[in-house]
Length: 225
Image 1 (cartoon, rainbow, N blue to C red):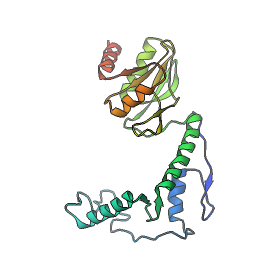
Image 2: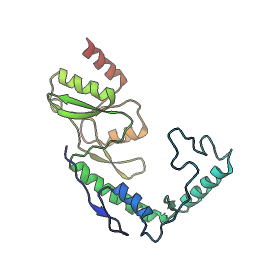
Image 3: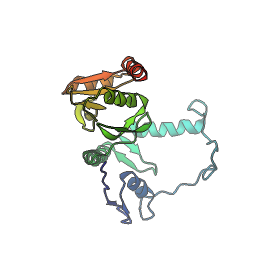
Image 4: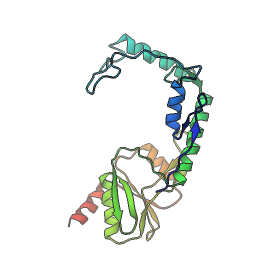
């Protein structure tokens, strides 16, 4: 798997940082940032593991401090502003511009073979005689990979992203799980189906099969027999 490092520098101190998230966090607290706001450390700052934060279990209905914070955030949100951790407001236009830049950088990383670590399921390493060394998301995808090997079809872990219009009419990307060359079909392993899933599938330009719990259970029984 190929990855790339995108080298950037802090606008204030010119420090070189190769991660966009780290860069944003650094710039907000950079000592040379004129808009840097110092915050007093809370009573739990630096506390040992197991420390219970002051607001644990509190809600707007039970604590005036939580209610006040929620009202401040809500007012800034409906006024088209988004508060940064250091209290520096940015307009909706600037927020869209920031997201566009992140999207461009992310697309570059995808083209170079990068796979995100995010997701509900644990990443599992699997070595396939056909697909090679891959990562699958959770036990269901692992079963599917083993099943495809057992029936000796030509398949691979799909990394191609397909553009579609999401529920808000905006461009988004969808990456099916597997592609089987023998069948000329993409396979999506899916547990709970949502409106967004159906939106993706309805616009998908190629043949795709959705393998749900019933199919996975059949595969499991076949592999155990």
